[in-house]
Image 1 (spheres, rainbow, N blue to C red):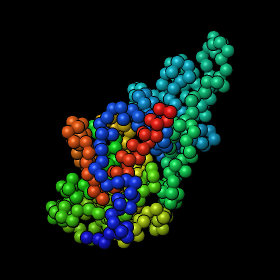
Image 2: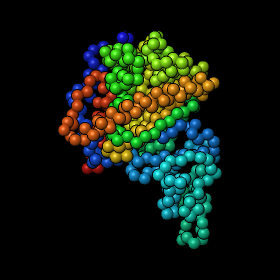
Image 3: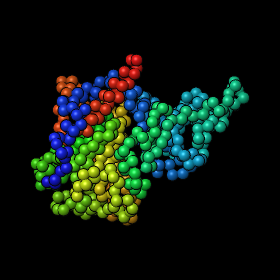
Image 4: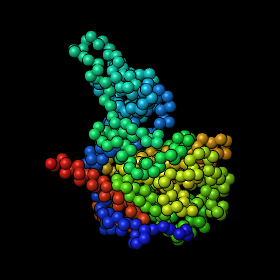
Length: 424
């Protein structure tokens, strides 16, 4: 086993005394009233990641984003204007409230390119900057000033090509909200990794439970044992797991993990198809030849470990950014739709392949990831069912589950602040 870096004294958790070490109450994942408070306190007040700038390659490019986490029916348009600026608007026509941008099915997200937005109901038109430009039979209206009826805008800012929105017009700037993690990740070549594989699924579990699964790797040697060859699986189960580094920068957090599996020292550790394609869960073994991967930003591999494999950043409330040593990255989003359901979105980003073998290596990594994610999702639905009985509501967490403590405490703090403000 590799040598692990830990704090000078005690455990990771004990170096953050505000977290405590007592069992954690999971009522926050089964209480409908608490869920509604989360919507108001968190998803209507914090910065939410909605996409990448590469999704808007030209003037007039747009995509829509459904945000049930902020309330049923919440829908946004994200668009690149004539001035090159990316803006966000509520997807609502100002005439009679029809959904402005949709295709055959109003509840589904869509994307495309246009010169203006035209309502399907009465043909009111809006510029890419959200201005009302045309009203059918304008003379039939009473004292109508088009300047007063532009699209309702939403705070929209970008960091390193990641597009964020915030429904709170008074929120602090995005870069200030993301804090030191964002500043210390600047310069990583996210913009070079434009080959994307995406998955989306409805999960029958509270949104926090899936973040819990990705904020600790303590489960990996057991839950994902069958994904490894038999001999290696037995080794992993025997060793257990301990991270290289944990860090909290409230409301965000991170975990750094060992890896060194690209390629593994012993090729017999992995399956034949992984040996043939030189790829697997840790991604393609051959690091892409691009600038920015040799001199990593300060935030990555904080333990400076020789066999570092990945860093996972949990940007509160619902975005995970996972950067892999071989030169690719993942994003996860968790969009709650009910106290016991959420939409899980995952995207894998690679440098575009130069040949068929590189393409197949990326596809193998994407398929392998999906198999692991399905195992997690299936387990979490079983968890949701059982905690929903309330037979047990408090659960002990180990040192490797510190980020879980932090997440549930942070959510509770946001909800308490919101409730206190409402009461006053």
